[in-house]
Amino acid sequence: MLDTTATDEIANDARARSNVLRLAAAQALTGANSAVIFATGSIVGATLAPSISLATVPLSMYVLGLAAGTLPTGAISRAYGRRVAFIIGTGCGVATGALGAFAILHASFWLFCCATFLGGLYGAVSQSYRFAAADGASTAFRPKAVSWVMAGGVFAGVLGPQLVQWTMDIWPPYLFAFSFVVQALVALIAMAVLTGVDAPKPAAADLHGGRPLFEIARQPRFIAAALCGVIAYPMMNLVMTSAPLAMKMCGLSVSDSNFGIQWHIVAMYGPSFFTGSLIARFGAPVIVAIGLSLEAVGAMIGLSGVTAMHFWATLAVLGVGWNFGFVGASALVLETHRPQERNKVQAFNDFLVFGMMAIGSFSSGQLLANYGWSAVNMVVFPPVLLGLAVLSFASFTKRRRRLQSVDEFPEPSL
Image (cartoon, rainbow, N blue to C red; front, side, top):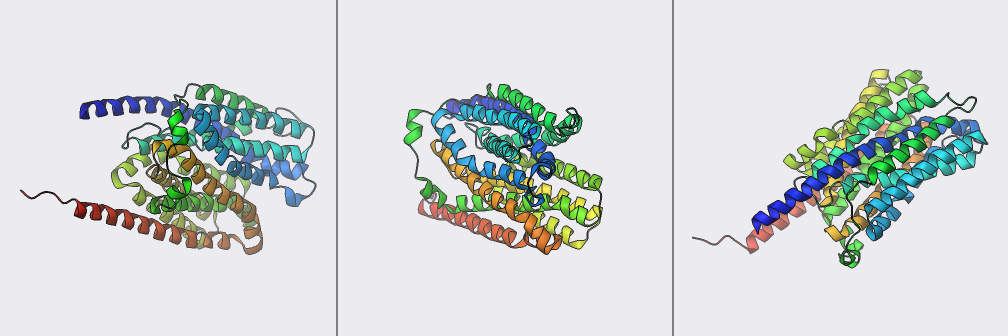
């Protein structure tokens, strides 16, 4: 029996490794979607919007789509399998590029906002790639599968900005119109890559099995995992989206800003090559705690000065903190559900994370404009402290239950 189980785990891990390669490639290609939107959204918005105060609305619509797409992604994956959800998501990516180019050509601000909302739906589906990589994998391989897929973001950080740089002036006088055309083509390539993912439709028994979502969500472990994800991602997004404008307000150049964001993206995804191994060795709670602490350190650096070096260091440390916090929290989520519960639990977790991120996206600009860069950094500390406290409580609860189970079933004396 043990030999059979070991053989099954080896076979499942081999399948998971094949999926990881495709999902990591798709992660890199999908990164072009968000890169094009974030690099062009406020500039196109300022050109097309009826008022300059609405210039950042396209970016907020992207984040809103990101939040809105999480629960439908889980429902589609549960009913028809993850591959169907992936194809629908990349279809939204193609529509994003086509509609975005059309909106720029016809100077339609609201059509452009619809395009970025579709881009958010595409982004929501891509967030499930990390969980799909762990499907069927052994307990030891799951954290590595999650982190390796996230590592695809390193290449997204290179591909996306270069795509914009190479294509923004190809269709004069319509700045960025051709960038969206190419983004649609990249989404088609991602669709082709994802058709090869081995993600069969769930068995009929899995559609109705498992515990109610509320029962799962009441677990201290899930509360800690979801809360830490809610803190790690939105706090990073809050500081990252405010940093370019804050640098401009402090008299720094656009080149300084671009350099900081570029290395922030590298810092976000670069650690993914070894984050999974660290989780396997030290445990997800330890890595999450380090990640949240690093986000607080990044905020401290931001409070200590406003030179280019201060901003660059803030963004780099923040990126590493996000990686440890978010990848670790994702690994924690995998410990809270059974296989037949995975789609609804993972979708609910992402809904919480990106719903909070949408709220933060709408408020970050106002926070910076009304209270300044220091206030943006100060906001990071209370959530981080809360996350560390809840994480410690959940770990203590699990350890106590384990000790109680040992006391109830003591080893027989010889």
